[in-house]
Length: 290
Image 1 (cartoon, rainbow, N blue to C red):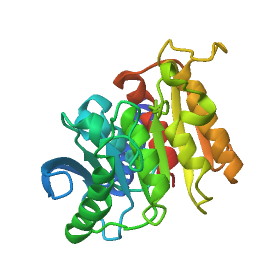
Image 2: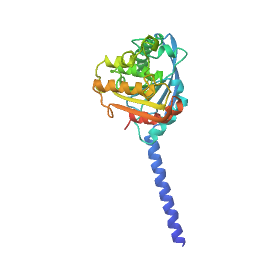
Image 3: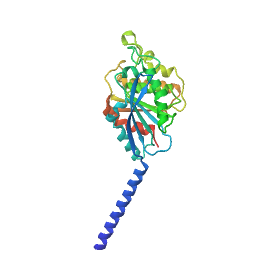
Image 4: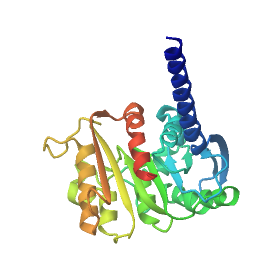
């Protein structure tokens, strides 16, 4: 009996040792994350732009960047813990995450750079694009080991529209675009002025008038409870309709659904941080998969 107990205890020690060794391997292969806040002075926006930076320690290679609009929402999205979990699970490669904080000028700084909407919103979208490309990216390149091409840009709602516009128009910097519940309804006419889906959604027109950008890929999310509006009374809410239509426009340009274009429709998903936080791991795994 004593010999049996000794054998059991020894096996337990071996199993514990192996488990600890496996844990150590995961820990060693999963870099620790640093999170800092920085204020960057922008001559284009005439303000200090606060940015949340999340990046792995002790990584020598140049890292791809995730530019994320509405960086002030990182806590609600559980961004740092999400990245940490995915790294620990060996599901993603290390990357440099930049959350760009919006302020009271959000409705003017986000939108489409080439055109304001019918309420003249988005009047500073061009300046915001210039900030990202001409100020933020060079600043990051000066102080950190990052890539200046092949990066990712994403955002929530109106920030998603902004990400789509900036990414689409700057293929030398971005190769992947992520849109969470995008405000793709952004339009140049009101319904009272004769708005039609075919002619007046601004980002759809931008894509239709653009050209195929080799190597660019897209990730879209929409929730079935994102809203209640159904402009054309086809039984599909506008948030989903606008997303599906933009995907069709991209397909007409030569992109392929399932490879170049990924669509996540969240059953019961709402226009809030709870839904976006739940689908964030799926997006990050797509953007930075091993």
